[in-house]
Length: 395
Image (cartoon, rainbow, N blue to C red; front, side):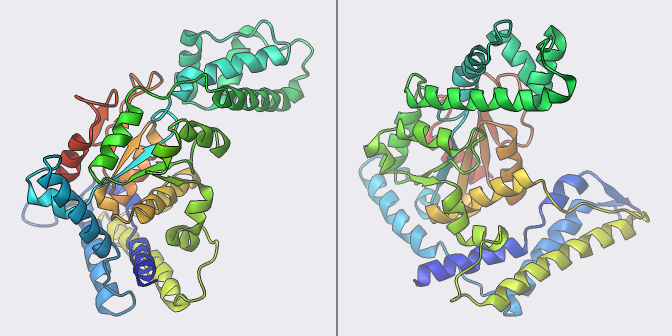
């Protein structure tokens, strides 16, 4: 009970200082004439506010200075020490005291859904609807994905604008037509995944086994899977019952039940918590964002309106990442997200979680400048637990 209470206080403290969206807007701007160097980077304003704000909340007594992961880290350090004595761990003392957790996305990471299933599902949908002239080869599919940035309605619009829409389709019914195609495509994709004809990515199972042997918690994130949990869950089940018992799965329900999810997504919190503390954290975070915006605008002698909000999709991913860290009982900076697409990378950067991208056929030529590393496959020399330890230590 105490552990849960401490976790909740820590999540509330993290919420209160979450002002990271400003960082991406202001990182490269310089205030002229401030300081002997001729300019002061605005990033320092944000850093200063983050630091002072966090200290102020704790010292004022509004939010207790608890470390919710202390017991967890002590427990896992014993596991790591045992591994080290048996020859499976590292002699580096920092590795035994700092616990690592790995968060895995599903689509693009556990399974290359976009390459192996999405295209085939579209073709099955076209066939089901009698669109015999429509057929997406892999080059056509990849070209549409890149031009539409992955938006499926945009892909359909681009394609039918080029080859021609069905002659019997009135212009004002194009929207409902595309919804019908996407509905059939989703059903076809579910059938493909359930049929177990689509393989997991090579090395995924060995990676999870290695993590378990080294005492590294693995959390699989089904909550923000692009195709939905009804696609993500069967993919995860392909790992097998034994392997699934060694990991944690975070879906929409787990996010909502996490303390961060309850607080941020408005699902309600336990009546045993101090509601005044929660209210203080929310108010303080909002006020602090306004302070930073005003200070930056004043320093630049400009009248600006800084958007301190992030998109709804990124907010949901952030909530899932925080919930993942909470269920792993490891602090956010000690988790590493293995992402398959840009939204996960963006959300991880926003909360200071290290992130690596595992390329898929779809993202083979994409760039991820904010990722800590871009890898091609599970296993040496690419994605291994030892490599993630090194990355976490250097971040």
